[in-house]
Length: 430
Image (cartoon, rainbow, N blue to C red):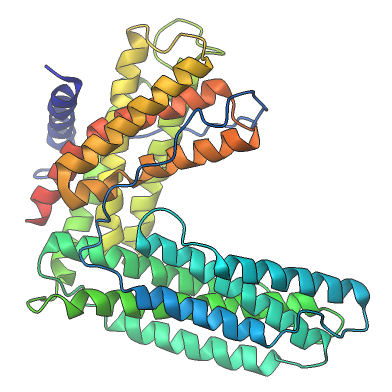
């Protein structure tokens, strides 16, 4: 029996046990504490983890290139209003604005980041906000007060966001497509809301605080970009789906059921594993096993919280997707604990072992995405992001070998748990 088939059997058995103990017709998985460790420097070759091999996007339709083009056009228009050598009495402010303008232009000329196009749009929204910040700081430093404009634009964006949220019926041709299409829309609406909060208010004296003025304008620009992308994403999906029907009620019911499943499974696994203490009587201090156990606990807690937040916010597509992630995280933790009990993960990490762990993690993620369809491709995202993050840490020289190997081992186990988790979620959606 392969580890993949064994993972599926354990996954379904665990769900059945938790469901029988908790709620009729529901099932569950994960949880525990929080890891606190420093990012100690370590000598690991920068190529120890290769580039992340992203699978095809789970978004049901192609994202129009025009959405990226619109951001780039807006960036250039914002920066066209700022001269390369700004005439500002304060030389330090002038030099800083000139440097920021040059950096923003370089970013506008840069390629879209790797990954899915819906994610690449996020980078363009950040670039757009940076351009707005440069323009806002320049206008403030040269005597233009945009305070009333910030208030008016924030109100207009909030109105547009509210109208889109009120009209969100999760129209889709299937419940699965509703999850995959509208999770992105929900995320963008949440991003818009975050940037509408006046964390940075426009200064009463903009000449004295030009960079604060720029930041206030940047937040409104980012909010506008987010709601525009949300509208564009929904329109792109519906333009290619003539038979879409409202799915709000069914997504709500599935999100609530999956939340109960996650709660029950988290409690079941916590009881089975005995709380926050690593398994067995052996002292695991300083081992990959200790790091692996802590990694699993941290990820389960985070994934479970994400489900709770999404349901409470009424983001039902996000809740369904995050529930799939949480269930897979729990099964990965369950398997990790079994391996630790059997004496695994005691070896001292080396560059060779880290390379091998990275290869296994990459292969497991590819297999999970290929075997499980679009929903599984969505669920492997945390593994893809972890591999990319670890690669960045290594390049910066802040990757601890034990933690790196443990994270890669967990990604491997997590990817094995994705197909059965995706199947479990899919069955509740159909």
